[in-house]
Amino acid sequence: MYNRVMKKNIIALAGPPCSGKSIVGKILAGSLESDFIDIDSKIEHEIGHSIAWIFRHNGEESFRATENRILTEVIANATAHTVIALGGGALLDSDSRKLAEEKTIIFTLSASTDTLIERNNGNRPLASDNYMMRKLITGRELHYASLGNPIETEDKTPEQVAEIIRKEVLLLLSL
Image 1 (cartoon, rainbow, N blue to C red):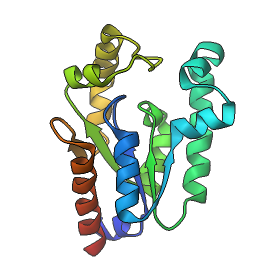
Image 2 (image 1 turned 90 degrees about the vertical axis):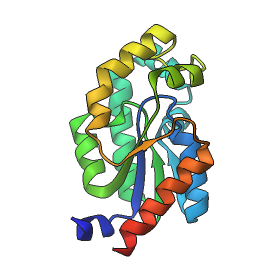
Image 3 (image 1 turned 180 degrees about the vertical axis):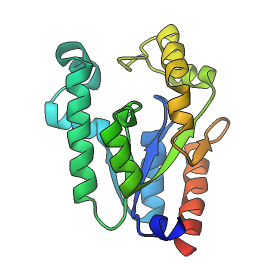
């Protein structure tokens, strides 16, 4: 198992909306002197609209197809050291999940539902209010738990979370 992990050079941050994937990813990439790619930002740049707009005008199915295509391109073109922040539902697609599991080291960020709600600014298309966020987290709870390498972000700063992941990555790479 460790030999397979050691050959991977891409770190993917997964987890629910508002778990800190983007901010932790930027900090982690900086500390590892790695490239950083935020899949949602890349989608917004390519389409020219916000994720909320894309969901509202093109629908979730179209968004997920774009997300899968961009994730595939990002992984195929990743440099020697890359940190990727995935969208909250990016690995619900079985092809995306299989690709991420084969080509990346996935760390799954988590926090309590109350904390995720507190962090939510309402810009999440599938979690725009407290009720929708609770429903989304409940519906995806088993999915997130199945991704592996859980990292609890509760009561931690993004810098602390990035440092926890950095140490785990360095430990994996030194085995």
